[in-house]
Image (cartoon, rainbow, N blue to C red; front, side, top):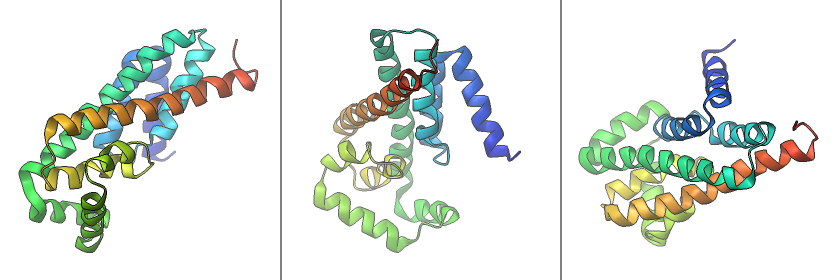
Length: 175
């Protein structure tokens, strides 16, 4: 078994035992370590909630905790981009095969759509993790960054957690 697969199994086990804390920490970790996909975490949490008989009103705290964890994690990336600057960040991003040209395209896109790019970007796979970089490099105001990130993250968490919740019910896999 691959180390990444083992890590995902560990997260799923943790979610099964500590659903609310687990979704917060999983969301926090997945934004700081981008290869961990929320599409593996949030729907699983929704499915587990349905399986454990948690009502829809009990899913709301999961959504808020997922949004909060993601907001904290992505704010760390924002602050790193803000404080380290473009040159240092480019050296790090090269490890992930992100060239200066790609970074320039993201910056141009961010400048074109402005602060709304953060709100929209938090709901788009892959873009979710990367949108913090141009926001930090281009010095977006932190209160607006945090607000737009939290709103976008909660919308994403709602869609994916409820998807897992209803999928479990629809498939008749819930107790």
